[in-house]
Length: 144
Image (cartoon, rainbow, N blue to C red; front, side, top):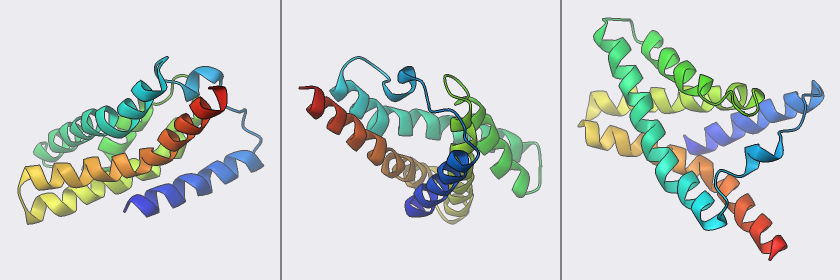
């Protein structure tokens, strides 16, 4: 699932290049001033918090007795819209990834306990964030 998310995201990034979308601002590439903090945020804290938010929206829409595609799409859209700042194309780039994560949650939730489904989603998210974390490490190594 993580590989599908990464592949789709890079496909959309390629089309963004064809459409001549502006490059992200410098504030986009650094979350905090410390590279170690950036890596921890990308690989540990963001996957846990955003997965909890994604699952919360999914369960809220599901409890409203919506049919199955709606909770998957609603959760993905709500979490993606949170990515509009500071570079709006990022929300479009990550939307398919959050759709896959939401669908993975729906699949694993039907087959097991909440805890297992949550860790599947958080693991997919952490795997996706490994590439930006490696980019942060490389940038810190160049600047050192």
